[in-house]
Image (cartoon, rainbow, N blue to C red):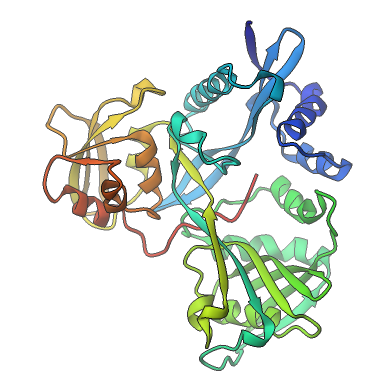
Length: 397
């Protein structure tokens, strides 16, 4: 059997979405179809054909993500699937290889995805880099430990106003929050359509929070019976954060409050009088692939000065397979090929796991995934790669 790989055209979009839906054992509504057409990028959509039959595909989107110290271009990888009739024939591997080589040619140092199956992507050099929390709490158990007094005012607003002001609030609130992505206009349109894409009730309620006439936060939620579901709660100050959560937790005729895709280090737990009542379900969120290791290490910042020599193992993208010296001095970063003896040996996937600062080297070393050759180098790497907060990967694609 010979498999042909090629990129899409706009005319291929309907077939691409059908293949995606079938690969995910799902069904695409017209609303879902229309929303995804807003963000579809034909030359970033890879299709696999067995003769005239399309049997697999993968998409990616050009995005910008906050990494420690700044913003990085990323390829946001999505909708990777192979049809059930053609599994276990090496097609997914071929698609991944083709896609990552294309991403490299575009000069995008990182590829990021959310894995439908966590067993798959490590073999292609992706590392589990961030976690998320899905939260649930009963209204009657949600009192704060310290009484909250709002210094501002919240207002319900219509969707039309939300479309105008939410992008500005979002941009201000996520600045320098590792893992968050900026949103272009088409992605904002996609987000406003998102709750109703899979047949759910698309009706959302919108709230803004102001202090001294300045918009400092927003809330979007839906109601299902006596359950309130937080879609987005974004705040640029503690006052805004605390006030918007209080609106959710005090809502009349509500018994339970739920929120998905919240940060792993959500501060709400530490604000509650009875933190055990906050039920948290942790799951993996972003998997990071360093497509160009040297470029990726060069572009991020480090918490302390120091130098380390890494031996990178990467059979899937062989241009990364080399020994690199990473150095940070007075905030100036360099990453160069080295002939020195390495301090640490690790594969590209594990380097992707620690890249955003959510996982430390000691954890992976204890799991026997990283080899320390120079005593103390793991401890130094922990400090260099550390970040003040866990990465928060809110957006899906």
